[in-house]
Image 1: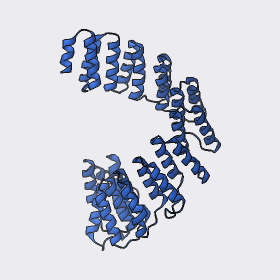
Image 2 (image 1 turned 30 degrees about the horizontal axis):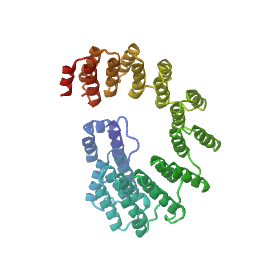
Image 3 (image 1 turned 135 degrees about the horizontal axis):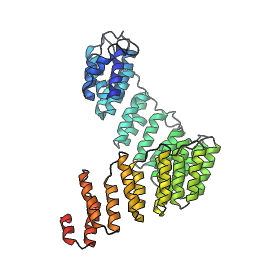
Image 4 (image 1 turned 90 degrees about the vertical axis):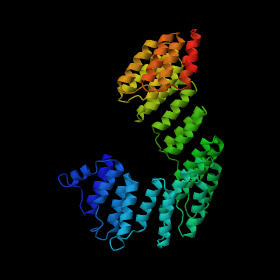
Length: 438
């Protein structure tokens, strides 16, 4: 809310021809007037935006519209409508104005209004640019209407003497890949490369999008061949490209190949990021190579890449699954000493390790720490506790945890009920179990 009010206040000041809002002037009053809900606050400020006094500068209006649109697309549309009602004597919208408006409509989920605005652009005789179509293309692809988006790029844009650019085509590539149509995306990529895409040769983002699509569909061979095609066309992979390939190789536990790609990456001057190293570390853990995983952690630090919560959790998960909870706790403590705050998934990993090992004292101590740090238990945490007590045949404690779960406002799910019923049945309390079953 505060950011939205600041943006709208800045827009109001700019409209008046001022620079930065004065700390002692009207800004404080503006903030007070806009102190309601987001939309209502925007309306209060917009009511004071002068349409007269723009100096007939559409540039100033467009900058203001952009500021407002950043946080409140609906408010930006309202401002545009006020300008339109004021008539051409005040300020006349240009192509940039309509492009901003189209973007606002699409962000608000109103593709129909976005296309209506595009119709106005064409009707008024503006020469449409590719960037004007971008929000509409994104909206269509998000709605799984990529075929409609393709028709616009490959046919309608050309009819309007608007040449598709690489950005427009890459939107289509992503849309196709998101719909598991990576082979069609590859064909479009080839069309772009052969200059049949209207002079929009593919770039590293285009190729990376298709490579990711094939990996997502499990077609590693096509992904690798597309990668090599990219190299043959002298398009240098970026960190995202390399990381995608490394992640796929690590998932397949092909660690030797993954390290080859990593070495090629570094040799070509592309430095791995945290995501790259996380894939390698997770791959080593999955393939039962903890020494190499710890070596990767050390290499990250020596290369100046700071491990994140996911990095530490991958190591902890491996150690806990192999009964090495003491080592996992050391990793946990090392993470907190470095200023990283464990998330609930990290706590769950260590709690599960303690529960599996039957270390109930350590499990409860960690649970208390989690709550003190402001993280409330979820269904998964409560189920871990219930299962831990059930395994130790501590029925009363298991039922106490079940009651606490309800006190926390959590409705037990099927897994929790199943665990409780199983505990009661094993303890001979079949009648009580039937009550929970009903």
